[in-house]
Every structure is written in structure tokens, then in C-alpha cells.
Length: 239
Ligand code: ADE
Image (cartoon, rainbow, N blue to C red; front, side, top):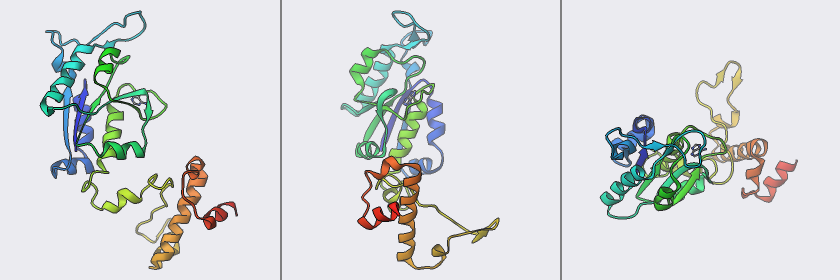
């Protein structure tokens, strides 16, 4: 997977992505990152990329031409149109299903706005997907782009050491994760649930599934509607 990011703060993207699992996956050649500074396409000696909004109002708007020129440079290199995601609170709310769909692409462009946003005309020209990461407003699109890239990256084969974990984790089956424990067996008087020490694989699986259902019912009852529960599990929840 190749990620391109159009931003005024490329170092923010680079620092965020060159760490931990995504950093290692880049070293292995499974992921690559190209953070492009929109300011390099300013086209004027003051390197200015923003201006006052027509009609008045607070803040500055990122101008169309530098964003367009930066985007063109990427599509020219690729020799084709690329799916281009604009991070905005006005977009569709990001979720695991969208991540799975984006993970099918070979290359993606993320466009990060700052200040009061980007001139609408260039968005109409280049953006294919408008995505929000949740109902709150950040100072720019960089953190949302990192959130999306991280989520998509772990779905790319080989990025996680164990392929099963990408599949079995939360939301794939609309249930939250079961609790995890590691050594020691007792910590500050709190014991690891005995079933996990039993070595009885089927009982462990049963306990984990129950815990997932209990947690989902408690914290995210809205997800339960989508979860595929057996008759027995539905009764277990009621009782
Ligand atoms: N830019 C500012 N806030 C955002 C959000 N919640 N999601 C995506 N992009 C944003």
C-alpha cells in the first residue's frame, strides 16, 4: 500500500507514521509514505497558500491552485487517477468497513485541510471521498489522516505478525474485544480468571465469546443489533 498525504505539515505525518508497527511495515516494504508539502506548490515567492474568505468571516482559506498543483503532481507520477480522501467533519464517519474497502486500493491520496478549510472548487475537482473520523472538530486533517492510515495499514497482509488478529478483533463481528491478561497470575490481589489457566481451549473460547457479548451489551448496545448471536446467547443476555 502506498499512501500519499497532501499537507502543510508533512513532519507531523512522517513522525506519526514512522513509529511502531507502521514504521516496521515500511522498513519491510509493505507500506510506503509520501508526505507532500502543499507549500512547495505555492507558485509565489512568499510561499503563500491561503487567503481571506470571500464573503467575509473569521480565519483563512487554503487556495485552490497550490492544492491542485500538488495533487496533479501525484496523479502525473502515478499515470492515472487516484482515490483521494478529504478529511473533514462534513464527511461520512469512518468505520472498519470503510477501512476494509480502502485497503483494497494500491495507492491512496489523503488531503489535509487547515484553517477554515480549502477552496470548494478544488475539492470538486480532486476529491473522491469525504471522510470524518467522528463528531468533533480538530485543528486540521493530519491526525484524522493518521488514524485512517493506521487502521487501513493493519489490514494489509503481513503488516501484523499474525494474520488472524486483524480478523478476530473488535467490529469485524460487531462485538467488542474480550479482556486480556498476562503474567503474573495474581497482581495486587487480582487473579487471572481460572478458565484462562485451564488449558481447555473450547472453554476459553466460550468464556471469551461471553465476555465479548457482556461488554458489548454494557458499553455499545447499539452494536448488538448487528451482531450474529445464537438463540442461546440471546437468552443468556436476557437472563
Ligand atoms: N478535520 C477537522 N476535524 C475533523 C474530523 N473530525 N474528521 C476529519 N477531519 C477533520
